[in-house]
Length: 504
Image (tube, rainbow, N blue to C red; front, side, top):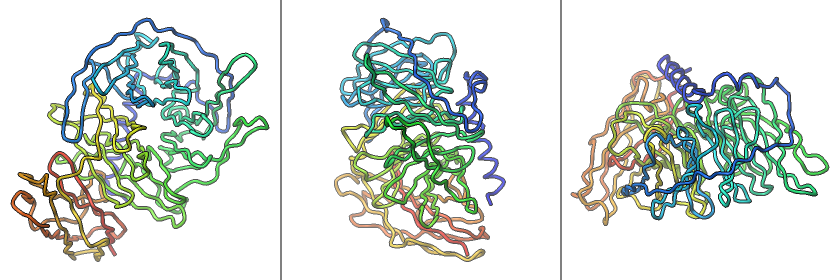
C-alpha cells in the first residue's frame, strides 16, 4: 500500500492533468461520449481550407553542451511536435492556432495559420507524418482532427467522436491509430481507394466508460493501449473484412492481472522484445518494466529534483536504433534516455535560467535520420529544442552490486560505487552524488535514509576512479520490493544506475 503522502500526490497529479487537458474543451466532448461497446464507422467528409496566411521569420537559437533550443513567438504554447522525413520540425501552437515549420539548420520559421479562431486555447497533443507526406494534428476544440498538405498549404478537416490524444502510424499498412482520452475510444484511419479518388474511413471502438485511453503502441499487427484511469495496459488484435479493412478489435489480454499491483496513472506504453512492456507511470514518477511471462514489475525512479517536485514522466519514444527509450519529465524540467543495454538513465536539464519553478515539457519527437537526437516542446516557455545523446558524458558512475537486501527495521547496508572522469572532458568538473527510490513519487525514501561518505567528487584533481560508499539505513521501511537509484550529476546532465532493493 502507498502512504497517505503518496496518495495525496497522485490526487494532485490527476488534478493537474484534468486542468491541462480539459481547459477550454468544455462539455461538448462529453455530449458525444459513446456507450460501452458502441462502434462507429464513417466515410470521412473533409472541409477544405486553403491557407493564404503564410509568414516567415528568424528565431533565436541557443546552443548548450547537449541541448539546443529555439525560441518561438511569445504566446505560442507549443505542444505537438514532429520531425518529418526531410528534417523539418513541425510544431503546433496551441495558443496561436498556428502550425509552424522550423528549419533547424538556420532557425527559419514558417507559419501557417490554422482555420479556427477566437475559441481560446486548443491544445494540440499529437502530430504525425503519414506515408504520403501529409501532416496530421489533433486539436482539443470544436474541430478535432486536421490533415495538412505541406506542398499546397491546404488544411482538411476530419471529424472524430473526440479529439485524438495520441496517434501512431502503422508503417506496414499506412493506417493511423489514435486514442481519444476524453471519448474512451481508440480508432483507426484507413485510406480507401475507389474509382474516382482516394478517401479515408475512420472506425472507432469503445473501451468502456472511464477508461481514459492515453498512449498506444503498435507491434506485430497488435495495438497496445494505456488506460490511464483504469491503471492497466490492454492488448488488442484487429479483425478485418474480406476487403482487408479493419472492422473490429479483439482484446487479447490486459496487465497487470487482477491479483497483481495495478499501475498508477499510466500515460504511455512501449513494447520491446517478445515479453517486455514499458510504462510511464505518472503517479509514482517512474518508468516501469513489466515482464509478461513472470508478471514481475520493476519501477525505475527518476533522480530527485532539488525542490522535491515530482517529475511526472509522460510520453515515451523508442530510439530508431532500438538501443534505448526516451521519455519526458512533465514537470521535471528534463528529458531522459533509458539505456536498454546497461539499464542506466541519463537525464538532460532543459530549463537553463528561468523564473518558472515548473516548466511543462509536454511532447517529444524522434529525428528519423539520427537515432541520437530527440526533440521536445516546452509549453509555458514558448520554445522547442533538441537533445544530442551522442555527445559523451564527462563522468561515469558504476557499482559491482545489483541487489541490496535489508530486514524490516534498524539495519544498514554499505554500497560501494566508483566515480570516474573522461580524461579529455573532466577538467574543473565537480560531480555531485544523490539517491532516489521507487518508494515515493518525488523519488524520496520512506523510513529510510541514504548518505554518501563524500557528497561530491572533483574530477579535475584525480586521475583514476574514485571509490565512494553509500550507507543505506533502514528505519522501518515497509516490506516489499523497490528500486534504488544512485546518481552522479554536474547540474547539466545526470546519470543514474539502479539496484534492486528488497525489504524482508
